[in-house]
Length: 244
Image (tube, rainbow, N blue to C red; front, side, top):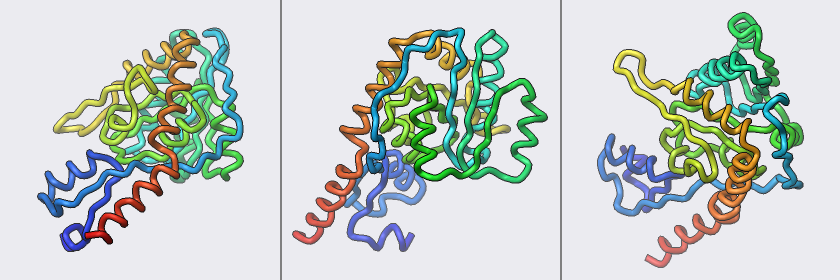
């Protein structure tokens, strides 16, 4: 409470962050600002290949620390459904993962083509964003996703859940395809795996949709999610406080 009430201004990455504070703690300060996370443009080449056909292998990319809240197992289940319908798919997982994670995937999803890289450097990450076909975010909670920022930066077509800040960041059918989440008082939050699989198949089948989603994601980055915009908005908050 002291941390939230003491500052002259409160900055959140999303409006849902402010809503959360107001609901849980109360109106801690009337001087609140929303400044979306911004990414440094590391995309040297915007050229992407959107022309794959459905009978070719599609490479999906997951970038995050692997834990339950990031929804990786919902993504694996969805890919399994896609594969059962005759599509060729593979998944690259980049990010820190717990011990035994690779072995668990090999045991539980033996037919899936999954590459687990662990933590990667910036140059390898850039290569992954360029070489893979579709980005997928399966998070159960997220305020301001840097993975979403980076995938948008590289004009990567994205499938994402509709939770929290992701729902605020992306617009369904414009710069991403969104998947519904559900809530159970017994099991908590979950991802609609069948819907995710349908979105995957739809993107694989529709070249023009992949191109539209990818190019609009890049526009989203340029217009709302660049580091320059984040800096300028933050400086303006400081200037306003000094003037008062």
